[in-house]
Each structure stands twice: as structure tokens, then as C-alpha cells.
Amino acid sequence: MLRYSEGISHKNSGRVPHVLVVGGAGYIGSHTVAALEDAGRTPIIFDDFSSGHRDFVGSTPMVEGDIR
Image (cartoon, rainbow, N blue to C red; front, side):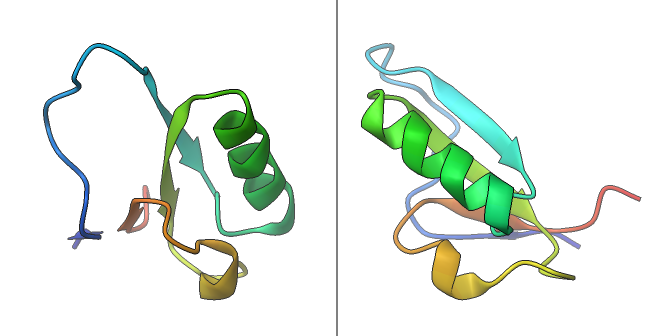
């Protein structure tokens, strides 16, 4: 089952490319998300929170799920 956060749209305005960050709520993933945002990209986090933290997500759009 997947749960989508608010703000995820199936359409991209064409101005800023979206980047899917798998494991974006973990330590390395959250730093990757921050670097992408600093570079002007729009990251979307995909995480199952098995070892990540919701505090790391902030207002970044995210999908909660497991790829297994």
C-alpha cells in the first residue's frame, strides 16, 4: 500500500525536474534531498520508514511504501 503526501501531482510544470529519492528519510537520503533542493530540483521522497525518520522529511513531498 502506498500513501501519498499532499503536494504530489502527476503533472510537472516543465520548469523544474522532479527527482525520486528512495530512502529519502534516512541519513544519507535526507542530505541528498537537501542538496537537490539547494540545486533547484524538486525531490520526492519514497521511504518505508523502517530506519528513516519522519522529522527528516519536513515539507518535502513523499510517498510511503515498500518496494519489496
